[in-house]
Amino acid sequence: MDPKNPSYRWWVLALSAVGTLMVILDSSIVNVALPHMMSAFGVNRDQIEWVSNAFMLATAVAMPLVGWIVTRLDYKVFFIASLFMFTVGSALCAMAWSYDALIFARVLQAVGGGGIQPLGMAMMGDLFAPEERGRAMGVWGMGIVIGPAVGPTLGGYLTQWFNWRAIFAVNLPVGAVAIIAALIIMRPNELDEHKPTFDFLGFGFLTMFLIAVLLGMTNGQEKGWTSPYIVICAILSVVGLIMFLAVEASVEHPLLDLKLFRSRNYSLSMTLMVIRSVGLFGGIFLLPIFLENIVGYTTIQTGLWMAPGAITVGICMPFAGRLADRIDPKWMMAIGSAIAGYSMFMYGHLEPRTGTWGIIGPQILRGLGMAMMMAPMMAGALNSVPQKKIATASSFLNIGSRVGGGIGIALLNTIVTNRAHTNAVRLGEGMAHQGLTFAHLADRLAHVPMPAIPGLPPGGVGKAILAFSQLAMMHAQVLAFDNGFVLGGIILAVTGIPLSLVLKKQVRRKKGERAAPGRDAAAAPSEADDPGIAAEAGAA
Image (tube, rainbow, N blue to C red; front, top):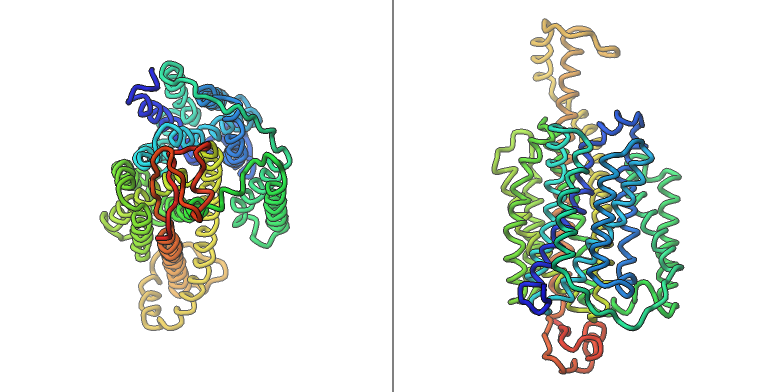
């Protein structure tokens, strides 16, 4: 297809969106099938968790390479190679003959996937003018927020109807069609003559930081936040981050140009990406667990309850992106943060008897809020950096999202676990004040046939103590989930709103027009970089 054809960029956008959705789905679709894999390969829980951990870590490690690779390979070759690697990895996962083979295939799959997501964002920044990037990001970003919501449901259906291998095999026809379409549609882009050397030292320290922080966040609750394992992860992550920043500030061709963070909009967008991920992934993580463990729904039923949120995002993202091209994005992001935060506050009263709209209503609001945050955030971030730095900027935005998701899940999971214990103790202490109620219950249970419970008094008294304890434990867990949702809402609203409001208004310059002196230098590239890119002009 001729790149000058107005529809060319939209076809490339569609290909990129499909690839991104495949990668995001595969990060969550496997979770419901892990028990089946344990049985198939005869491994324990700690071992099978590496099916998810290996994918998460390899994806995060591959993402920083995108900015350097695009100086050596054009978008078409890189995109097709990433798709091919992801599809081959999926095929090997579906055919895995041993546990080790499955882990190897997941790593191969993740390395391909780690290139697809940031490359897609970079291609959008290259193909679309700054005043159109909001709409483009609104379409492309649907996969990022829909994937985590529908992944577990799709995985549940495929595992129930077929077997666990189907969750990987489903990628094969989609990947094959996408590769063929990319070969036909995409055209090579011009490469910069400047070929920077690879920053091996910086990449090593960044890899050290990412692996340590993601492993620590993933295993903190299970191993204990003060355990030697977590302490070592914390030390390695801090040392890795400090050394990475030191190296990047001193080498001639850094993996990450720290000058990007001189742009207020890029720095704030990175921060907001982390905050958004805390709320998005934390909320998506808590609600399915509540519906399955507290209410008693199956995985598939839970997925159906989660569908309205995904549908809302899918409908709202393109409209939010188009709106972001027409009005100051900071207001959309602030309103989106407020709506998303309020939706989580609404779950502060969630309980097993909550009605249909009590479960679906907040999801619809959260989908609207996330759409209003996401599209302008990504477009604003890319509009604030030089054109030749877009690939690097997009890869680190995606890394921020990955780290933020890990932080959100770890934080809210820890809060729920700790609050459940605290609430149980408090409710247990209140049993002493239920004397009359307790006596009536003991009388009624005295003749109910129940096996004797070691350590409890015989007769109705022991049965009443057991009933009260079970009721208190259930209520304590419900309150703990409510506490977790409220904390997620606070994070989104209290931090997201003010950070959004201090974003600078972006003024789009005409070609050949230089930025006014004294403006944000990193956000106002020279004509040699990109004469038409948006410059940040004046504090809002």
